Image (tube, rainbow, N blue to C red; front, side):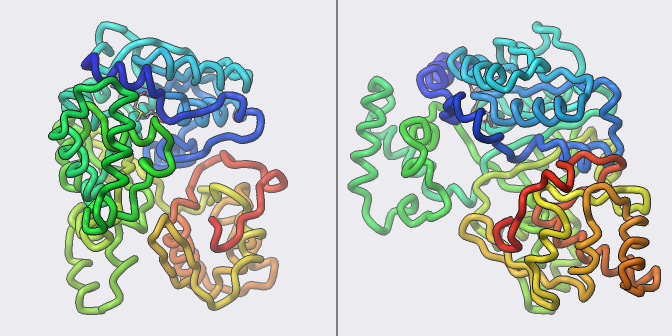
Length: 428
Ligand SMILES: C[S@@+](CC[C@H](N)C(=O)[O-])C[C@H]1O[C@@H](n2cnc3c(N)ncnc32)[C@H](O)[C@@H]1O
């Protein structure tokens, strides 16, 4: 990594976090939620009682590493989470967060992705690389290095910037460079960038872009990361697939799946039919063009040989598990016959639900398998043929998995039903 990128993350560890907050909440996100890892990379069938090693490459101030380490600790898994990070300032914050939580399954390793070979950290079942590759001089070489550190059955959770949602960012970065801002000391760069922001006309694409807000709400670190970064680039879905392919990898899942499905946006039947004829990657690319607001892409990647085979599919023995809340609580918040309304940032969606969504959801408790959900629903008086159950369950699953809320696993991985927090239908 270059000195300039290193200096930025020493001065502005990202994201800004106060370790004391660990006493009050766990930051949950994507990639690297244990339910997503199991679902998209291991078919929902990873036995976490077997040793599990995860690498957080460019782990920053620790959001992902702390989340997964906590989830693995809660399961009592024999796991090691390696936090690899070149910025000492960022790593100290991550270590303080782990200390407050009493997590003993994280190892902190100073260093960069380019040094992976030399560091001899061993093979990993899972590698998180969130918000890092797009800052590297050679992202393809970086991803190839990560791919080389994967255990045979392993996979990667990646986040890179999305090109369309960041419309205006690169123009503002260029304007600041033309003004010689990058030659100043970091604090002066921030002051000058704020002055430019104040004077931008309403016609400016950054001002017109409602999807990026780090320069407004992210403090100095957020503004620096967005507008003054020494190096960043953004990807379309096709660029991302090309990057993955260059490292022998393929996309196993995009988060949230519904945002990468043209059917979430289009209602015209003729257009929908044309969209359906596209291959899955082209469909995701079309959804990106239609949506316009995807400012990051979160993807799970597996070695090309396992592409199409690593994500979980509905099976009688798999347990449907909600990410937050439990089925009965969610079912109470839904009105029979009404669609599920969900927002992601500025984008609002309305997903039709199958007729029996509410009684089926009422049986999803994170402990019952798909077959047991059917049996419990029947016991509760819901008379359904096997075909009707399969159709309605699949339709419910598609909607809830599409919004990244329902996963499949062969053992309970989520919070116990009694501990789950209430989630409102529109607040999930
Ligand atoms: C935007 S932050 C993301 C942090 C963390 N992954 C997260 O999502 O919260 C980018 C991080 O990548 C680190 N980084 C930059 N270049 C790197 C490299 N070549 N190898 C490893 N980490 C790097 C930075 O120090 C910084 O902490």
